[in-house]
Amino acid sequence: MLSRSARSGEISSQRGPRVREHASTDPVAARAAERVLPRATLAEVGRAAATCRACDLWKAATQTVFGEGSTKAQIMLVGEQPGDQEDRMGRPFVGPAGKLLDQALAEAEIERSKVYVTNVVKHFKWAPAERGKRRIHKKPRYSEIQACRPWLDEELERVKPEVLVCLGASAAQALLGKDFRVSRQRGQLIHSPLAPHVIATVHPSSILRAQDDESRHSQLEAFIQDLRQVARVLKHSVH
Ligand code: URA
Image (tube, rainbow, N blue to C red):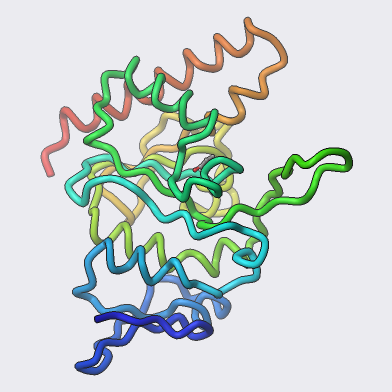
């Protein structure tokens, strides 16, 4: 039986905690969700994340949206944060961006069963629209990304993907460094201790925001090309 203390984020068992330091050295993360039981399953980690209070984003969100997919998945896709529909449904990439992602994965001949999807931040950050009831997405702060990082580390450790794919600048900069530029380095293999192969590409939401159909079509094609590169890397991987 696992439990997580709300502030320290520490998971303990009735047999006593067996703790492990996280990769993140950020003090916010250190205060938040520093230690978990090494043998906790992904589902147990997900249940612990459901009560996370490491930053304030939980207050306005409906629920924690943990990652989804098999621990045997060879590809891990990491986005920024859940959107409005993900927040309501409690599942990542089920809204418009997720539908576009599904379409692009199918075009790139990547089976969903090979993919684990998650986000660097696991609560929806939003502000009310000036008029109406819409909830407008707000970019997470560095401190919020850091506070959430231990959950991603736990997911990485359990899934151990062959190929890690950062979707968009927030994920890429959180995982590959603040100087990373998706515009310059998309589709390239990046050396990183996080996985044998690491690639960044655009976020599907950016394609949905394209000015017109022609630009949306070309951006989608480029996104599919990046995912085809992911499929090729996986096919030739010797790990
Ligand atoms: N955008 C993301 O980055 N993640 C989701 O889960 C949905 C939209």
